[in-house]
Image (cartoon, rainbow, N blue to C red; front, side, top):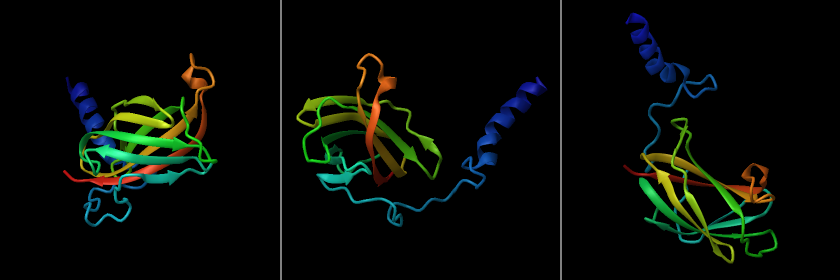
Length: 162
């Protein structure tokens, strides 16, 4: 019985002892959203250009601005020449760098045609600063998503209230 209790205690204490996994202690007091300067203000049509010059625009969020819980995002994607991008796979990851964890919700990506996509849900399950990365993937082999080629990636940064 003692070994089980010691194992449980070790398992519970391990995350706090490890910090962020890079040798630095985890920030236990991240700034409030009013004080956080890393986030960006939501406006309909907020656009980002990735390193490969693909354009990703967050046309709408429901709710707007993005909030704690499930959000539905309407996106528009275009290539470096401004042509709409239909038929892509999009990998979405919502990450809280202050806590060192991701949202576990896997969104459904709907290709609405002409470069428009719906992402549902973008799950921001707790208040704080979030980085939501969209990886634009070219589905080389439709039957094998592991063969997709990343064309570009963009990051949207929002702080959500509790």
